[in-house]
Image (cartoon, rainbow, N blue to C red; front, side, top):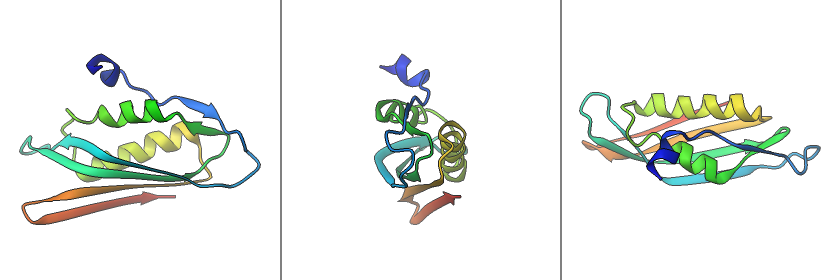
Length: 116
């Protein structure tokens, strides 16, 4: 499984209703990455909300892609923006919002919201 996570890419499917605007709301409550300064783990819920264009993301590939961050030393802002950019590039959605809702650490809670 570790090799699959390391090689994870986002797979897409054709949108079965491309002429209809509808919302896909995905929540990934077990996101982890590493603080780039301390190396300590950061935990978050990643929320993805999008109105698809011609493509939708295949959920298993999304899960593996999000799990690929678990050993990455990346900031909260960096992780959320990278996820947003990759989804935007791959899906070309009509609307996209990615929220990184990070657990409090050191009595500080961070929520990063990137949208178009």
